[in-house]
Image (cartoon, rainbow, N blue to C red; front, side, top):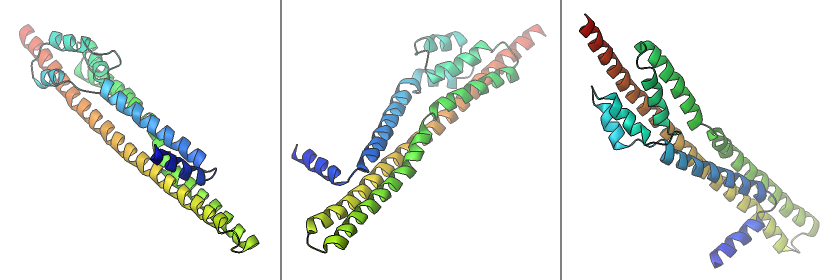
Length: 215
């Protein structure tokens, strides 16, 4: 509790610029928590689903059965169901529809990541503004009172340093979050593309078997 009180007192010394910095920190944390929940809830690939799709010549009914147990907002469920719905069409048509759905999913995964990227740049700049304001306050006291009031001088220096530290800390957290979820988004889309290729291969095999039977 004492540590929290000390942290609060330090933030208060940071001056008015701490308010927008804390707001940026809250926004960054909210975005990262939202992304973590989305990937955990709607972008996780179960081992049963992965093993089935990796198997050439699987039964489509088995795939539909696994997909039926997933949330309708699950990204892999959405992607696979598009392929299943068009599997009677020519393979190039199915690939086109799957690519369209993958693009929509990618846009959903990258939503609000630009805000993290903006915070990475904005937070240090706001901290720099706080630094300038704090140093101006310190120099103003020195200019008007000399060294009569050293507490006021150190208060201005503290405001400058705290604003800088807070801005850099928020920027670092947002940077790690942005890089982590950007990498996770890239891996998810790569895996979805790879598994989509497996499904298209199975469609081609089915169509080839049907052609051989009618020949």
